[in-house]
Each structure stands twice: as C-alpha cells, then as structure tokens.
Length: 573
Image 1 (tube, rainbow, N blue to C red):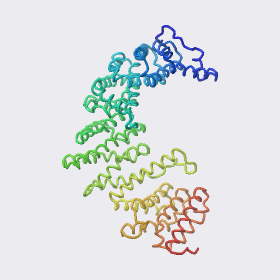
Image 2 (image 1 turned 120 degrees about the vertical axis):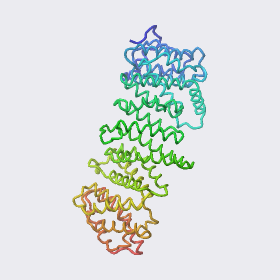
Image 3 (image 1 turned 90 degrees about the vertical axis):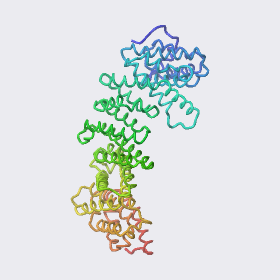
Image 4 (image 1 turned 180 degrees about the horizontal axis):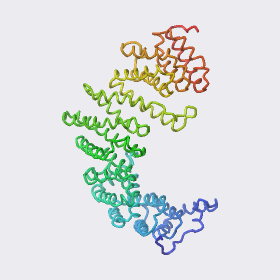
C-alpha cells in the first residue's frame, strides 16, 4: 500500500480527464489544469504533496504530478525560492522512501518518469545545492530492490543528460563537463562499489536488476577511470555472469564497452588477451555449439570490439617502433581469426555482420605488411570463401515482394562487397583465382545447380569489375593475367547457355554483367549476335517478369550505345 496522509487540494474533475478513455470535455479540462499548474508560482506544490504522501493510486495522476514537477525543475528552477527548491528535494526523497515500503513496484513508465525528474534535479543542483545527491540516495535505498531499481534508472537518465555525445560546444557541454569532473573527484568510486554490490547481490534473485546495473556500468565506463572497472575483482564477476543465461547478453555489452575504452596499447592488448583466455577456457569460442542466436549476435559484437581494439593497438605500436609489442599484438590478432571465421560464416546474417568491422581492419593490417606468411595467405583465402558463401541468397528471399528482411540482406551484401574490395587490395591474384574457380565450376553445372549458386557465381564476376578497377572499364587490356582470366570467364558466361536459367535473379545478373564488361565485345565481337538475341527474346525484353523486362530495357539501351560508340557505327541486326 502506498504511503498516505492528508489529501492535497487538486481539481478532481480535471484529473478524470487524464484517463485515456475520458471524453473530450474532461481531456480538455485536464490539459487546461496542467497549463495552470505549470505556470502558477505555487499551485504546483499540490503535486509535490500528492507524490510525497502517496495520495493517489491512479497511475495517470501520479505521472501527471511528475510531469508538473518536471516542468518546474526544467524551466523554472532558477525562479523558485529556496524553500520551494527544498520542497522538491524532500518530495523526491519521500516518494523514494515510499517505494521501499511498497509491496509492488510502480509501473515502469512511472519509474522512468521519476528517474528523469531525479536526473533533472541532479543536473540543476548537484554542483551547488545538493552535492550529497548520490550519498543521500544510496544511504536511503541500501540494497532494497525497489530502491535500487530507481537508483539505476536515475543513473541512466543522468547519463542521457550529461553524456549526450550529440551536443557540441554549448553551455550545456561546459556544465556537463564540470558535473563529470566533480563526480570523478567526489563520488564515482562509491558508485562503482555500489554497482559491484548490486551485481553480486542480485545476480540470482533479481536478474532484471543485474541487467540494469550492467547497462549502467557499460554507459559510465566510457568517461570514468577504467581501473575502477578493469580489475580482477570486477572483470571476474562480469565474466562469471557471461555463463548465466539471463545475464550474458548484458554482460557481453558491458565487456564490449570496457574493451572500447581508450587506453595504452600494450595494456589494451593484455586486457583483451586476458578476457579471451577466460572466454575460451569456458567454451565460448565453440560457436557451432551455441544455439541462442541473440546471444551470439552480442558475442560477435564483443569479439569484433576486441579485434578492432587489437588492430588499433597494433597501429599505434607500429608507429612507435616497438617491434616486440607490435609483433605480440599481431600474434594476438591473428589468434582470433579462426573465431572470426566461425562468426563470419554463421548462417544468421546479424551474427556475421557484427564481425565484418574486425575482418575489414585485419585485412587492412595485412595490406600494410611487407610480406605475407603462408598462414596469412590461408587466412585471406578462408575469408574469401566465407564472403562468397555469405553473398548467396537463401531459400526464403522473396524476389517478387521484397520487404524489410530482403532490404536488410541487400545492405548486408553491400558490407560483404566492401570486404571483397579490401581482399582485392590485399591480394588481387588470390581473389581473381578464387572467383575464377567458383565461377568455372558453377557454369559447368548450371543446369542442375540451385539458382542461388548460379546467381552468386555471376555476381562475383560482376563484382570483380569494381574490386579490380580498370581505367574506363578497360578490363581486357593491360595486366595480361587479369585480362586473360576475365576474358575466359566472360566467354564462358555468354556461351554456356546460362542466360536461359529460369530465375529472375540469374537473368538480371547475367545482363548486368554483360553491360558491365561491354568492352569484352570489342575483343570478341563474335558473341554480339547471341547476346543481342538474349536481350530481345524471352530471356530479356520478353521475359515473363515485369521487373526483368524493365531493367533489361534500360541495360539494352546502354549496351547498344556502347557498341555504337566503340565501333563508330551501329551494329546491323
């Protein structure tokens, strides 16, 4: 039961309009009453009294009272008397005390609004009127679960207000910096200790509170002293929570934020390696045995963060000329490649997409090395095969009615294309040979191969045009090995009959690739008639799919224009 006492004088008729089901007349009266309370010098105090004494049980009225209080703090705080400012502080603490005694917590939307009001009061008063803000709250709530919940929500609301990274060079930025500096000096160690106690106390009895606390740690670690968190006591607790099903996703996110924190490159490498050793020892690197894709998506993001941190450390160390530390960091990075590959080829695209950043940056490191080892070449080939596999459509892709899932896959494919382009920069010969092998094998059996294998084989040939760029599309001159390989593949494409494959994705990819490599027909013009036939018959302009017909019409005009320009005359047909 809520704390109750003397009834505050509020307009009960107006309060009826707060109910979502109230008629328009009552709703209008409620809005007018809200404006009246906001603008009055002291009428809002009835809302403070109602909250402090727990007078109303109606959730909408409670929320309304917090809204009125929020307005006073946010827009009129400087004009309030010292007594009124004290009233706000007392109201919040009395309301919080009521929460400790209630058998049931308030609804989440009320707790969130209360946390916002606590946070606004903190921002206005911490540096001047209420320096003991956190100590007062912690001494009141102790380890009461209802109180801890409000405390954690308030911390997140403060983070949203004080550490808003989108606000640049404004008075708020200077104020926020001063608040953070003062917190670091006065209370952060105490807050961190409270987080440790909460994580330790509630990990079994109240997993939802533990997850909230992990979120707080992850939010604050970016601007507090990392040594308060990145120590054996705290990290071991976080790692233990990686093994608790209800906690491990939030624990993953928290560890990710710790890893992302800027620090000395040698120390960062040691931190990453110590985390990896523990995670590997308890079986987290056995990705294929894990069935929870939501957790694996978080874990993939964590591994990506660790990998990118190692790349950053390597880059910094390479510039300093610290040969030993640079070599050790590269070794640590390459030890993660088998795990990277497991995540990259995972059938769930979200899990795969989360590791692409590390993969891309690892390839950038290899590009900078004077010479590649056999193992590094093996890694490059493995990444190539993984990218080729993941470029492939799955059975569920709806080509006729593309929705959100299809749009997400298209975006994912763009990320994979960036990897393919980076692979071409690191080792163009390996990429060309790998694509040639896949393309040739698929074209030899296109009649019996699934459409997705045929489509991706042609797609890879198409992608080579950007991955291995040539001036003005002159792919068939210059580098003999490249020109010969591309010419062989194009000859196979236009002569093997794959243009007859009965799937829209294959038909479209065929014509897109023909137009991309239109210079091929200058080298081997004997193939022009058969390709023109493909454009004009049921494979192209007379295809039963409107989508194919529309795109082919555009591609055909481009193709004809190119032929006319390159031969200085239009082709007779």
